[in-house]
Image (tube, rainbow, N blue to C red; front, side, top):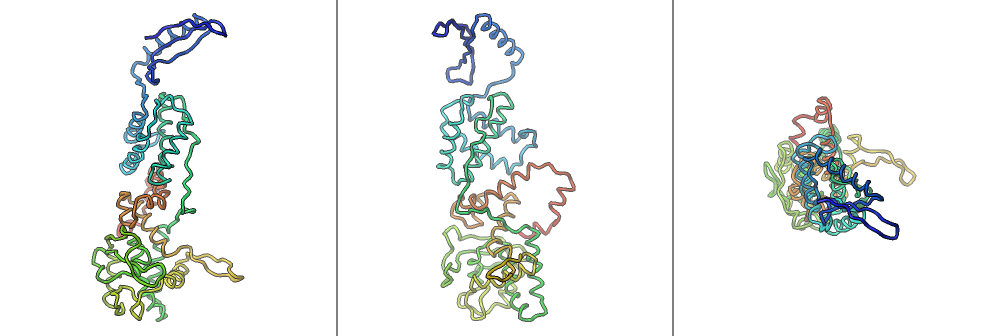
Length: 404
């Protein structure tokens, strides 16, 4: 029910209009005028507006706003974009849980910038990673933008409030592209078929190692310690690794490192053939032992073999070191692990599955290391591309699927 109340104070007589508003705690809103005529005119205009706009329902609870935003993402698309895919929607729903778990204590219209700052502090403390905290705050801004466009709030009070994603990974990982990975494989093929007998013999072993690294995302210490007993036709079992010191073989880095990973047919053929016909006898049952049967030195694999294949593939650059010009590889063996993760992300593999395949103890590590790649994949889905553009992005055809 609306009414007009006469108020007399230090500034003289004013007229206060009280009218229903579901966005406030009391259920009423107030507006003050200098004259009774202005107050009555406001009430008349308000009544006319409500009669001509009877269908618009107010959204006052933040949880309702988040739910409405999710529905818009799924069915209409926000800000004129296409609806999101089921993969992205699943991630949005995961993020939305943090929005609705926070004890807001205010309605949607009552939110102010300090409330968002408090929300940010809560996110940093309660989210599994800073990436998730930043993503939640970014998507909450999208919620408020959508609510503003639909007239439920006056503006976006979260604008400009962000979370710094600083972690021990100061520079986001930048794995080889699919094209660059194929360049490495092709270079390894050439080296294994070199006319130089010594080079060909070395790459008879290094070639299947390179294929295995990119096809499974195993850490270098894990595939250098791989026993023949853990190698099968379609999968590989990971349960041990060369310790960082290089002095002995031990269990995997964390208990979560124990895992099974599928092998593509190409990789399986190469690795199994080498293990059965060329691997030296080893007291440790190694797939890739040295001639003496011991495990390889990680530094030798990185500094000699992997550098050579990067140079052969054209993935090296000239740098000055100690007054000399040398070729520095663009990537390291560990970057093949990042490549594997990036392919899983591109294929929209479930985050928990990625965590398990990467051997991470908790999903926080997965999100901290690869969160920017996940966000990039989600953003790429929102791009509107023509048929030729879409085809060019998958120019490798069936071979892309055969790798992983």
